[in-house]
Amino acid sequence: MIEMQNLSFGYGASEPLLADMSLSLQPGSFHFLTGPSGSGKTTFLRLCYADLLPRSGRMIAFGQDVSQLSRDGIAALRRKVGVVHQDPQFLDHMPVADNIALPQIVAGGPVDTDVIRDLLDWVQLRQHGGALPPSLSGGERQRAALARAVIMTPELVIADEPTGNLDWEMSMRLLDLLIEFNQADKAVLFATHDLNLIRAAKQRVQARVLRIAGKRLQLAGADL
Amino acid sequence: MKHGELKSLDLAALWQGLRRPDPMGTDRVVPPTGITAQLTVFAAAAMAFLAVFALALALATGRLAERWSNELAQTVTVRISAPTEQMDQQTATVMEVLRTTPGIADAKQLPDSEVEKLLEPWFGPDVPVEVLPIPRLIEVSEAGEGFDAEALRLRLQGEAPGAVLDDHTRWREPLVRAAGRLRVLGLVSLLLIAATSGAMITLAAKAALAANGQVIRVLRLIGARDITIATAFVRRFTRRAAAGAAIGTVLGMIAIWALPSVDEAGGFLTGLGFQGWGWLWPVLIPLAAGLIGFVATRSAALRMLREVR
Image (cartoon, rainbow over all chains, first blue to last red; front, side, top):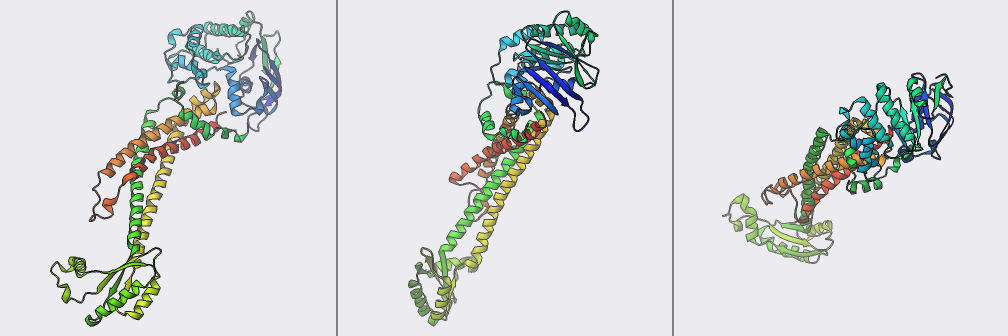
């Protein structure tokens, strides 16, 4: 699904922030990505959905070399990858339900109200469907972002510190939703520095833990 | 990504997106912007109002130049000032010369009654024309491509020394030239109005795009194509420009229609307006405004999208 071969990346002409990174994301896989603040977790995730292009190395996403993709090609790639940020952004003038339907709207397809309703139920936001995003709490925003990320049934969901601003209970709820999504043979790449969350997750899902250290991507061992 | 890939956001695709209705509500992704929308509509209306006047000026001066040119080009006058005893003989000579000159369709001597009418504004109605040394006037109509004025002038000089050929060239040309310049000024004004409209809409579109940077980033993140994002903005600004221009055009046409009707005494000023099918010309103004809105917003959207991956 996503193959990275010896990727390196740096902003501008500066020293590379990430170097020699290789990774293969397969359907049904669950990966945690961890590392200290500033280690390049977000940069790495942005490479995964082609928000950044590597300085060197090769990245194949869904059979296509990302460096060769046109802007429309990148848009098509992003419809196969759902992204949830720590601080998810919405169109604040549109109700939550419409924000969740946004990928369907911009794809030009019909908006499936049944799917929207099911997703609102799934993330337990049924009663907030008509509300505007600024009225949602942090946890509700994360769940709305997750619903928006999965509405096009992507092959992969990338979550960048989605529990960073949430309490433990809400973090576990979000984790449960991602595990449920993963069980439909979808891949999840979850960046967090919350080791307790990773330990809790490992009891419920077979997950691999990756760590960025010294500019490189490593498979974390049992020291978690 | 290659630099030229944004060019794939071509006019044809965008135009197609504009023509389609918006059943999916894609336009809703751009938040309503009250003051920007109102200012765009107002600016387009004001520009269209001015454009109607510039158009009317261009058309009226065009008509004027053509009329002066045609009317005056077709008529030439021969004036005979001679002692009374030679007047009849010189008149007959001039008539004979004119009759045998190629390119002259007709020559007729103005009767005294018409000469009296010409003099009336200066001498009053009771002028005794017969006792005044009034020159004879012969009105000449050209045929086809006209005659060789210089050759005729020399011939008249030789055969009837009191005859002077006046082909109105001296005063006709500056008038026609002035009318032509006015027409050019009208057209230049139209171009300036179009350019100013384009600049204003570009500024408004850039402001709207900058204010909606978050919207654009969210849309790109969820996989929106450039064409989808651009169309939402372009459609909105094209409609605003066209709607504002339609209002301004209607108001401008009413203002032109309300001008005093054409009057000989009023001359040029009362002739400022549209005639017959000419009233259809202003219909093009909202269309042109829509096109300007389309091009200006597309260009602003392209620049903005280039900055968002």
